Amino acid sequence: MTDICALDAVIFDVDGTLADTERDGHRVAFNAAFAAHGVEVTWDPDEYGLLLKITGGRHRIAADLRARGFGQTADQLAVDVHRTKTELFRDRVLAGEILPRAGVAGLVSGLRAIGVRVAVATTGRRAWAEPLVRHLLGEGTVEVMVTGDDVHRLKPDPQVYQLALRKLGLTPQAALAVEDSAVGLQAALGADLATVVVTNGYTADQNFSGAAAILPALNGTFPLTAERCRRLHHRWSVDHG
Ligand code: XBP
Ligand code: MG
Image (cartoon, rainbow, N blue to C red; front, top):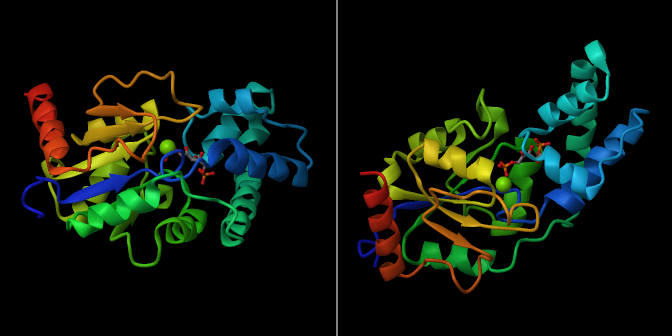
């Protein structure tokens, strides 16, 4: 069946796409890390939602500390707080506390059943992303995984997607990206990838122009069938001349 659909691989984002990690996962770990370092900052869910446009936890912390007047100390403090945050979040991942979004298992096994390769492109750190993806998708499912540790420029820069394609040995025409956010979409489009956006509570109102499809969930409606797949690629090639 593999040749019916032009897809060779699907490249998944992690945060917000494979799992709803941000509000009750990363945010909680950031706040615990601030407290552990004696920094009187607590990000509430709304404030954290606004800060998500800054990708990469260390950059997010540094930008907020600077905005709060921490001045010269902001960058070093951000490194220290982020190191602690990474350890705390990894602990939660290893404890099995982060669950997949509904439909992830069915979608990924469906893709593999028709011979589509699975890859991951995240701006998060490998220390937690690797065990999380293993927990969410199972050992050996993901062929290529690119994280924030592997690139110099984070999303919305396309580098993570370009590197994932290079490691897969594919052109963008042979792959599809799945993202949850406008920043992620921008990164994937920058790598010339047709992109399906699966929204969540933080991203539902963002601008997704350029997306091949915008869906509220991974289960049920995902363009997995050969016909849908063909339509997606057709639409993408028309849009991109
Ligand atoms: C994810 C991020 C990350 C996470 C936190 O964006 O921007 O910074 O919020 O993880 P995307 P780290 O889903 O677009 O990849 O603290 O490890 O950066
Ligand atoms: Mg995301």
